[in-house]
Length: 89
Image (spheres, rainbow, N blue to C red):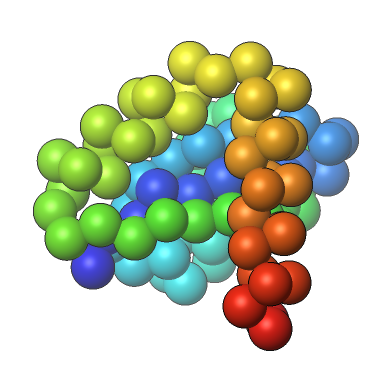
């Protein structure tokens, strides 16, 4: 399984990435071994993710999300929260 994800950094900023092991990636981010962007903004917490069958799909989605404005990313999070509520999460 491949994932595109958003984390919220301690300073409130959002970072988007992709991985094939989300637990390992979150651990790496919070140990300061993740992306250069997140190293100085610890801790980070996972706020959103999508799953894909292929690495290429996950990378393509990451590319698309990284080009979104902050407001668009926040809307993506709000939309996901409503879906979770509707599905009983």
